[in-house]
Amino acid sequence: MRDFATDPPVEVRVGEALEESEATVAIAESCTGGLIGSLLTDIPGASGYFDRSVVTYSYDSKLTALGVSREALDEHGAVSESVASEMAAGIRDTAGVDWGVATTGIAGPTGETDTEPVGAAYVGIAYQGEWGSNESYRSVERTVFDGQRTAIKEQIARRALELLLESIHEQI
Image 1 (cartoon, rainbow, N blue to C red):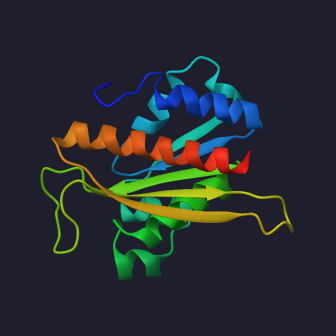
Image 2: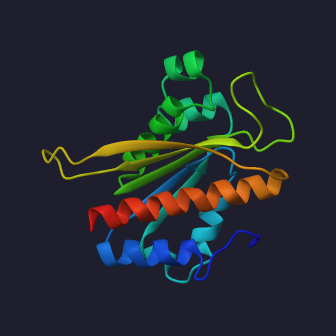
């Protein structure tokens, strides 16, 4: 699963940036099914910055493991900006890490809706600033990728890591 890897791969660059900034990360994955956690743990020394990856595929798991609100799930559905944002903040806060990353989307080949095609995904990033600093934040990007299911999953996972890397660089 290296069809969309750069040289050096984004997971290597994320690890270096996390080590340099002495930061930690946890991942909440839906459509990527644990792939981001797998990519990060392929790198020796990942235990110094990687806390966990939680696969929350169902509505119930998003609610119970991450604290995603029932209202967000009911009103917007799992594949939405609000759910990605809540997932990222939920994993950040439950893991007690500096960075939370979340993915939710439609990897296909079925599952498209009137508003979201196959390949659509939302990637959430949540940063934990120091208490009282007002530096904590969340951001979400919507992406749409083409390809078969595994190709879409890899592209979403790598885009999530690229967004994390960009966010880390903004904080350094």
